[in-house]
Image (cartoon, rainbow, N blue to C red; front, side, top):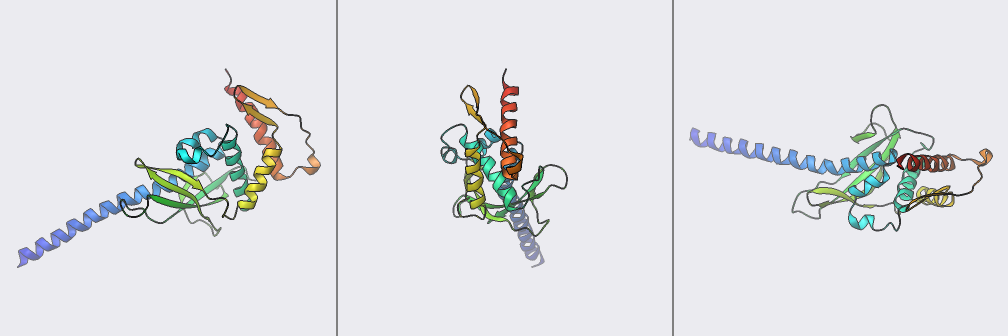
Length: 223
């Protein structure tokens, strides 16, 4: 009788151990979705816009018609978030991500949503991952990721139904109307514009700085 009890207890312990290992493994795979989103925004903050195409699905990338569209989109997204969280004059910021839901292989869709918020950077890199450091509300389920060939890819950034929709559209419109530097297939074009400090708002200031930095980057990369 005692041997049978020990066998049952041993079996329960073994099953619990296996279940624990499986859960930890799944938790790690789920959290990788939030990490992808953090890397995406880190690339934007460091103007590594082209790198982000590797983090997105082919279908998501195909929505951009020319080489300038992804840059305009990502810059406008960053500006909208900064404006929404009252950090438009902030140079360095931290990104907090929060995974919504839990992915289990074979059950339901291979999809996860990630909520995003930004805050002033305290120290270190902007990759903060999952955190609850302040009471600022997240932009709920802003990013949708899908599981593809064993990795998470960004399938959509739901700006239209989010709290930053207006900020994004205004930022994008301002960006398109203030193209001081237009990248071309073999270089760039400098357009004639005048800048008045009297009417220079924070968003326009960001756009001007962005355009000037883009020109310097193109020049420095030319060999």
